[in-house]
Image 1 (tube, one colour):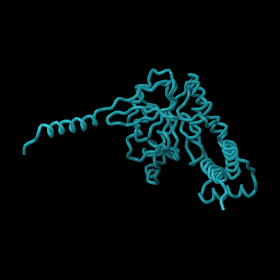
Image 2 (cartoon, helix red, strand yellow; image 1 turned 45 degrees about the vertical axis):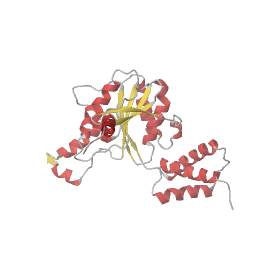
Image 3 (tube, one colour; image 1 turned 180 degrees about the horizontal axis):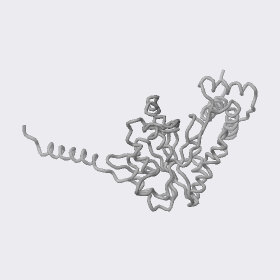
Image 4 (cartoon, one colour; image 1 turned 90 degrees about the vertical axis):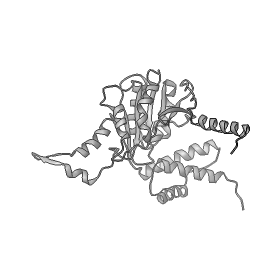
Length: 296
């Protein structure tokens, strides 16, 4: 079949277009003076930091029912930002109780003091050595934030995490801390079969290797901050706080009544939990409904 010159040139252009799509695209260089947070974006075989548009309006005072947890992590972060020794932190416990919100509220408090936040997914922890190279020597104080961190038994990514936390010849950058949230205290699944390898020696129980491996990972976090389910009183306190904040933002007149309290309790009951996230969702639903014009 004879190919005309025009068809040949079109094939060449199509080939070049496909090849260009496979070429690495130039990535923006982050100006940390203007950018408060970024997210690690995997791009085989490497990755890059994507600037994030963040709102710094969530304050520590907005988080209720977690006073001890706020004090622990705030103190640790203040030490780090000031250039003093501080610990990597594992925030573990009940869902919806403010673990992630606490980290973001700390960014709002310390951004002007030089703190910056880098979010990374647990599946991208294999890229940690490359990420560390990009921030080494920077004058900023970076919190590497991994939300909902947990591993399966055969997950190799946790080995990369261990190199950052502790136990390697090459030290991690001094301007980096890792804050991770998890529902698991030991980050790895714990099975009854793990206990079969335990031994009784001179009346003392010696855990098996599987248990030791799982405990060793979380032990590398110098600070453990535990979160527990809210009591009804704590839940209602958070509901009232967010109702006040949202109603004020929209100039909505309102008052706390027994009927409103019962509505908030029913909202939590239908979801099977009482926590800060549930309180925030109820407040948004109630204020939004109250703002709708009344129609017949």
